[in-house]
Image (cartoon, rainbow, N blue to C red; front, top):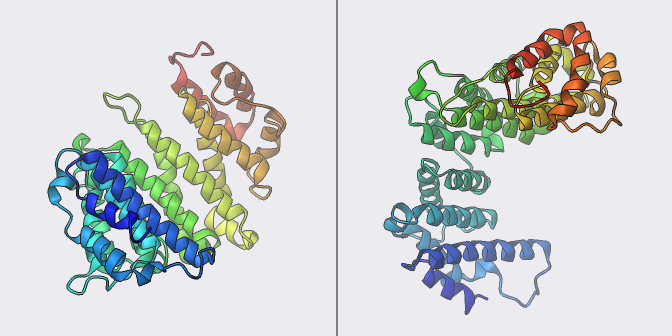
Length: 390
């Protein structure tokens, strides 16, 4: 592998042919990552060469490949595919704990960061996702410092173009480790601001808001049980308020109800936050501080409203979250819960995407006083849709 396959792939990674260089870069990354995993697990033959010992044949050539990669391949025709492959290669090398001092005259990690940061600004969403994934991997390999974090946060500013905001929101969601715990408030406040709907239509971008919501969910998910020690109650309330506001995002453009992307992300993130709180070992001590009774009621009401949406995937997401609140989180109490359980039993096979089935099931929920207004509001919003059930 080291004597024949990798050297040949490295040579062809700079090919003029797009499919060749794309495939070679992906192959190089995956081979190095698989090799390092085999070494760490002890499944590789002791007599086989170790990755970090292959300095002249593997380490230096691959490092030089990244440092000197032709810019015309990244920015010219087929640049999106090449950038995606390059970001995947960087992620694989980071996951392989690639030597930082592979190049005596340059900082390889800086080269990787510069490539990834430029890729976050691209218009192609696939490139942005690949770059954001690489950010998470590189952060574990070479932790983000205050300077790079400031650059990521600055990318969320409304003055930037929408593509930059989308990519940098995704990147923030990929972060983990000490930087998130040390700069918690700064990161979350910027993301909360990015979730808000902008009054100026030229800066109002649904994908940016959706990505910011998903970043909030990813960061909270990565914290896990530590969420109560890292995120203060006041900040947690601000996060919840921003997500509830996101459930009222009905922005539209030529593509239709683009606000539904934000609403769906908010539902999924609220579900995850509820799970983090309800399943926390110190639930009894936390619940009234982080999610008091009125907040839990507001969350359930907002999601019940989305459960009678006219868009099938919105009903599916909201219905799934609602059933989790009712049956999978025993300590997640709210007013009207037992009555709602009787209307939506665990063993009832409900197809939330089927309008003809879900509306007859949800109309009786109007009998619950605490949920009457949000459910009725959702039904009114849905009137005029294409569903025969309305």
